[in-house]
Length: 246
Ligand code: ADP
Image (tube, rainbow, N blue to C red; front, side, top):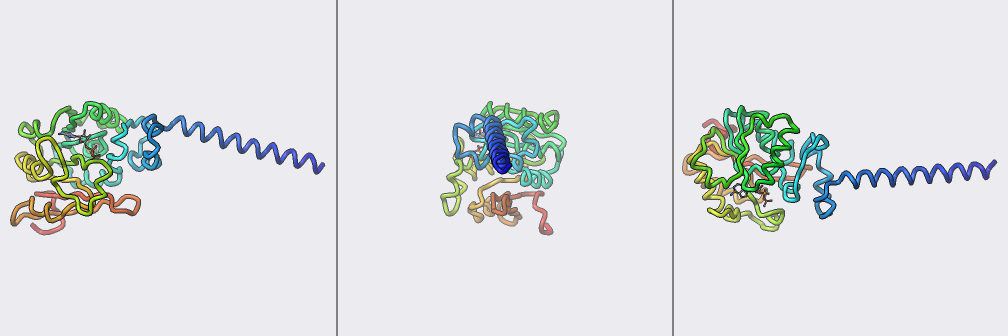
């Protein structure tokens, strides 16, 4: 009798181990190829539903987009502030911000120099059912800027990958685009509209951002928190400044 119980217990434990192995195999096979190739991305994979709440409905990302995607909570907040008729997302990547803009704005123009990113953004916007409100353009933002009209422009240019945080203070000149740095990017955008939302690293040189606005003009810094940590800053210009009487 006692022997029987020991055996039963043994089988039970074996079953549990087998189920656990099955589960981890299942999970491993659902991990996208870019993560399996580079396990340093696993920390982003664990946050996938906070990057895109509809992640399991068909969201696609490439290696770069895993660490560049704006957490949905943050992009939703920015989109609320940028609500307007026509917004340009100048560096849309895989569409984390574009999707939220399409939920608060009538029309969105989403630009990226990389055709792969535009395909990802289009796919991801379809998952959220908002692709009909977005015009996707493959191209260089600087080249397109003189042809653009918009109420608001959102700028989330490349920060140079995750290493930006190694710098004590992030200089706008570290944004290295072919046609100039962060200051030139702002100047080129000012010709479209004064209503600019500039998405920048948390260690951005705030004095530089203030100087961009020009004398007498207001600037607002919004701290974006994710996982209880300061994740980034959005700097608002023009009519997007809300916290003071203008
Ligand atoms: P990083 O990880 O270095 O911060 P990101 O991946 O966030 O860079 O870059 C943002 C997006 O900007 C990328 O999808 C990239 O393809 C796009 N991009 C880079 N240069 C240009 C440009 N000149 N015009 C439009 N999009 C660009």
